[in-house]
Length: 505
Image (cartoon, rainbow, N blue to C red; front, side):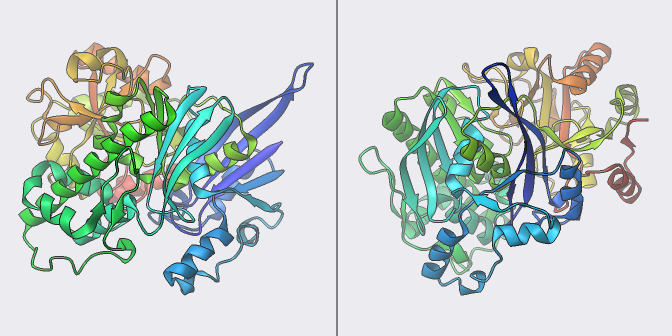
């Protein structure tokens, strides 16, 4: 049986394909994730909310779907939209009718609540059979945050907070306030925080926006304003570049303090020593590192936002764990990974790019659609930022052989690996690796284990030839453009931006 899950019609549409089979005398069912990809990679429109025929056609290569699940409940969502006065959104097509615009033979799309899709995407891909789940995002149907308890195949909601009180909406509003694009550039605010002075606007932001902070007795975070339509009228006199950085720093610090309080609340409410973090806010890798202080085990699925719920809505309905070892789930550029070509380019030019194998499912490249560079060059960071058309302050991530991570980075004692770039830690030798450290000497580390395929072999060969177990790894795109997806994308990108992309023969 082939099962599809999908998200879309709001932002960042995606589709996942599963195969469910019965095996053995007892006819036990196994569920395997075969494919998952973002629509934006096919349309070339960043965070595209619409599905795309190229995505559908890639999915159909694995067979026609017998079942289809959708990541939220549209009718329940419409009740919130009516309450919020968003009448222009009420006329959207049903998920079934919308899907049939792209695939006329599609069976009816069954629906799953938004936060359950998030929670299930994290819990059922985790290595834990018992864990707490914390979901923080902007908004689902009504939920803006939820706490779940997972035990074996059952997920039960313990608590939730409702619209209009939303930490995610507030963080996005502050993103817009400093001149960035909400629901897209929150990661830039997070990075900008390292160069700002949080103390300058910390008290002012708390006074103007926050009505009540969470506590063990009352978990709610209440806001004085509904920030759903932004807060551009807040403090219109704040215009300098330093003001922008200072607001970013204060926003990030307040978020971290709230997040840390919820870690305590989740631990107290569930009694679990393992936690799963999901929702768009789980991409805040600076804050994520705090979770290791309160829980023995931490899992963050590499696509914790709405796109990842294409996986979650299926797992929520099927109530089954799947093997999830990697995020290489998308379009396949077939052929052998060009290791020798990549290393040759690195040794000669310090910077190269690679597009090979299955594309990463999630916002971060992990070696299959990557710009790679020698992290030791003093000018490498500036050169890569110029290639990507990014601000000069923006940091880059290191990929490192897993067994060397503790030697070069101050990894949390209970975090043995970080394969999906989900934690920020201090670099022990920032002067030796200027290309992969931020202004506060931290790095968003990607560890590469012994079973991580050709990317592992690439790093091993690089280490053998240079004595350096680290490479700079960043997404093969420029700002506001999706990652390169196909071989044709790679040729166009290389010609347009003047960087050779190593492709399989």
